[in-house]
Length: 225
Ligand SMILES: Cc1cc2nc3c(=O)[nH]c(=O)nc-3n(C[C@H](O)[C@H](O)[C@H](O)COP(=O)(O)O)c2cc1C
View 1 (cartoon, protein in one colour):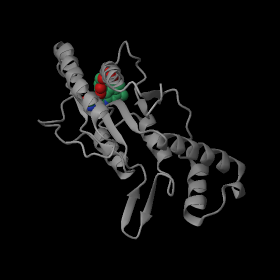
View 2 (view 1 turned 90 degrees about the vertical axis):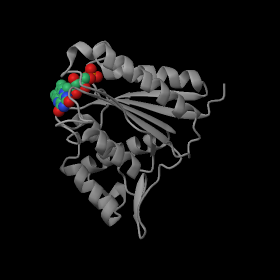
View 3 (view 1 turned 45 degrees about the horizontal axis):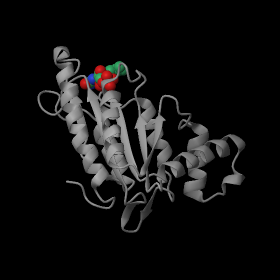
View 4 (view 1 turned 120 degrees about the horizontal axis):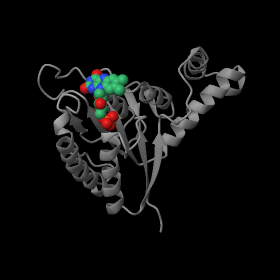
């Protein structure tokens, strides 16, 4: 079969599918998407198993030299060169996909650190975005993304409303890169309402099925409402 597109399934949860509700909801999404789009290749990326450079002094320095001063990569020190080349490889690979599905839990009001570390590797000036006289421009246009997020507490209403920043940041970061982001599938209240866990998962799976069909059947450059 001629494959017509590529989907990257990015997960940031170390618990494994047996224990993670988010990964189970994500699987439902992926199964539904694949049933509707046999032509799309799906690649899985578990961020807890992915090697990626940390934004340490060498990478920060390499980034400034290459992005800021236009110094060629082969003139960098060895450590700097190795790390920025790996970063560019991660960003290039990411760019080659058409669809992105992220699954992550809320940890301490944000995302697991590996997800932020991954985003740090995707922001490469001149490859995935650029600052232009008209403002920032994301290069990943004509691509669709979605985030599936699980939460122990409740953030859509009540005293914690708006205190969650993991989903907000992921949405902002991926939109900044140009990706057309769909509404997040949120499954919340797992730890506050432990007796309701099966119901919360079932409802989120229903939403995931609807979202997966929508993603599968939408033209890539359409604005999803
Ligand atoms: C280190 C850690 C920090 C957490 N911090 C929060 C938090 O700030 N807010 C929240 O609602 N839940 C928090 N939780 C609970 C998880 O978000 C929740 O158990 C998870 O989303 C359930 O989905 P899962 O089964 O896919 O992991 C935390 C869990 C861990 C392990």
